[in-house]
Image (cartoon, rainbow, N blue to C red; front, side, top):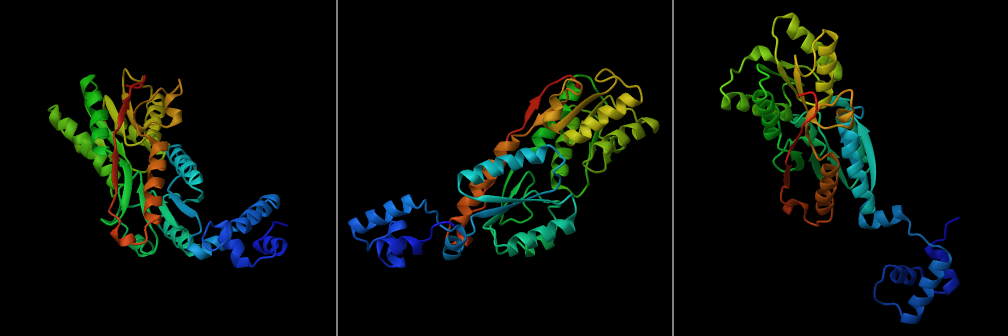
Length: 332
């Protein structure tokens, strides 16, 4: 059984309060008494009770991390950054996977807040879900990967417009026009920003913005494969495709090969995220890299500053927008 303050107090023959003051380096304890208490605590291998300490400080030293898709290699890298930074600060992390379901996202957030986590880091399913805000009024929040749904919340994301522009510009400058765009659900702010970058690059290089070359589905690899086949079947034949994320882009490559197209000669493909699979020789995906691990760490740093403030209402919104980086491989 672990040693307690009562055990130390009984051996040293002092009150529980005296032991507590000594262990917490507070005033009111004689130097020789403090020395005896600390020596006895060391001998007994005493460890503070985290639950009891949390009740006193009204903290649990835990944070919740809510992500939409644990099977997408992007999010485990973010989670690793969150966990490493949290652990270094003495915090535990509860990970919840929503599988892109809004109801599940709300249930997890309600559960985590009921468990009195000190804060939340969320990659939201939808940035426009007003219902989400009802559950977030009582706990500090930082959004990661996608921008916040509220002007009052902080976030860590990437310059999606610039990333979309860089991907499309590469395809145009290498002669792979017309360029198509295959993305996820249309109500995603992230998608809209990457689509904006795509369209801006087309305009800047005097290329037509043809909606026949723009398709929306979900984030799954199968969607990329299905859409490129469907486009070719319809007679819409792009020479280049920008996939909103790497899983979509890998699916596009797979689907293109299945209908006899050579990559990149017949079809050049650019993704977004730079997940580990992207660098595999058989894929060799050109992509826009995000600093995924660093995003997780930065989110924790912002959240812990917010948790540590007495007056949370005075905490300024932190908006950290990181730079994208074009990684050139064989697919484009």
